[in-house]
Image (cartoon, rainbow, N blue to C red):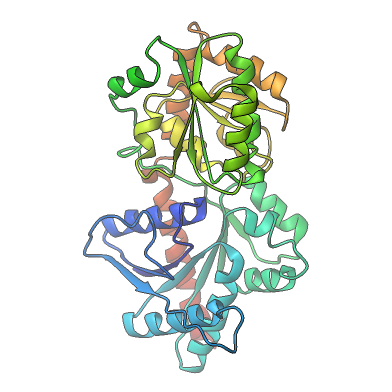
Length: 381
């Protein structure tokens, strides 16, 4: 198959999943064409089946904001025509699904019918999409898609609750490449950070308010009163300065390291004992899955799709949002030497259920089905 993938080319979950999906499909022999405004962050290796098409966004004095959606739709039209694509797979509804609809209509006028699959990732539905400024377009674009997927059952349910959706939504969860995300021997790194055998906690995110990084630091502050521990914070974003000030106020600076954005996050995860994800909203929790694949149990909130991944009492614990006291208690329970090996083993076992070899065939089957149904549609017309 020849598949066009449209995504945000950033460290965000939707861009990571879209890029890793494309790479996995290319390894299986499918021809994958990425269409976006810059090269995706994780598109980091050469494969004869991988192609990248940059969306050229020109700036004109007339426009206060460059019309990205129009440029994207035009690029999709060109790539479909000249590369002979079988299907467009757009990740994150805004504005990719509406741009794909526009491209689809333009191509139809030229006698080309291209099916569109839309994958919903989270904030495109739970936050941005619910805004009255966008809701009608989001609803229309989803309903006009030939196939729709969501990364968790919770996100599927939320989409039906908040939008007038008349399409079937298939749940295909996020996945992990266990060849990359696995526990590595990095004892020297662990020794440098924890020279006295301290427990090592980690959090990775884009440091937005919804991630509640302050709760990570507060849990660590309380935990450190009970056991020796260190904390690694991976990522960057609008809340970072505030978090650095909080560390100074609590006197934890010597035991907290801000590592910024890291590409090889699996190397850091490999030396950690506990991953902390206290988010207000998470449609799936890809960062938690990456940690689990590296044998790191997860302490998380109980919102969104996280409980579908992090099984309470088995792979870690889920707690109410903002309940620092309960999170601290559960962190101590996980880190107890009698319990920690079991939590680590169960975290890895759970991660194996989301290996790319398990999830990829679900996408391939839906691609084939959607393409065949579109051929039937054209024939009937």
